[in-house]
Length: 466
Image (cartoon, rainbow, N blue to C red; front, side, top):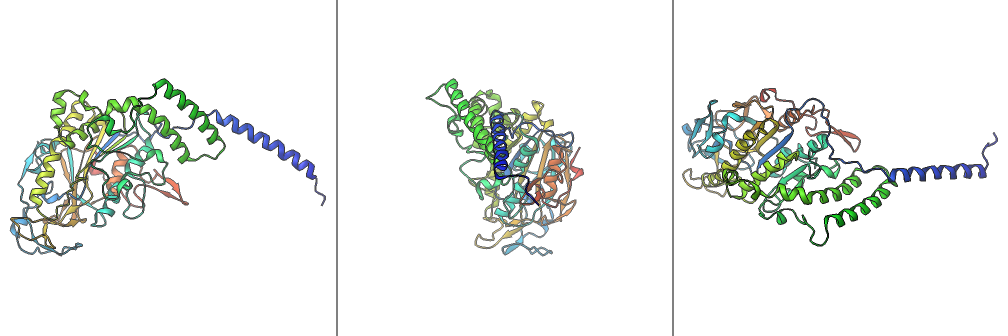
């Protein structure tokens, strides 16, 4: 068969094609780089618009805070009639050194170390049947924050901003207030992993007080805003030409958007992080403490449309009370009680609680028996508790939550979740439901498969929803 195309004809056609390709590149160069944080519509009408996650680093003891177990008093100092599978050798039954009392019209029993949170009991949905997979901090951090104990996956905050974008284009969509440096596993706890980088949490060391220290390079003393805008416009033109010559690259788009966001943050962030603009009465409500300041910042960010704010407590001195649980939990609860209660009261007073979901959780709980190991076993002295992944407590408040109730139960000693069990995957599925997402359909294709926050598990716990 004779070839109808000569070499000269082939080169002629090929040259014309290259010209058209060049024209397409020039046309694309004038396009705006897509904004990954633009507001998006979820699968169905959401109850919640924003999330504030108070994360209790180290494992708060549920039997000393939100899950009273009077049966431990009967076995004090004795072996419990159940087999406790833990990672370390543990000792005899250890009754809580704290008293519990009923709060609110709902009558929820809460420890005396959380009196102000107790006053908000009618707004809380306390989950007493949480459980997770592994009794070690690192994998349990990843499970609570990212839905996986081993592989690095996108965090819950990243999934929410990926699905919804942000209401405020002048601030990051996901901000993490974590004082005194990074916690265990560092930024993995709030990273975007294989999702585009625009959805990664922005870490703020909230131990700093001055706005200029909280957000580095928040102002430019050398250039006016007009000069900065001119420089950024020139940079944007070059970046658009650069992007037009390449296939769509989410990582590249996220990097280019970061320049624009950094510029816009100069005005918005200075206002959002400056709590001195709050009335004295409001600052007094939260308290002039590290956690009080960061909880007030969380409210200011949330009301300005930041989609997800995660607030870490215990990052420097964690809830990991292997010894002296009475002293350590008293101190940690005192630090967090007033600020967290103030957040709930403040959101409610401003009409924001009905559209803001507040999640209060550790990564796991603690055993109902005293830990022996090298920490002593005196129930009246330095007694502590080991890690417990089989049962612990968390609570929800705000948008779409059935408030004034306790849900589920551990066994009579507080070791294992038994009634209406809620796995972390179930909690995540329920949170996504409140934000308008079917957790099985909020996916991202990576490495040849569709990934989701709940992996291949999780069910919406309808008993938590109003």
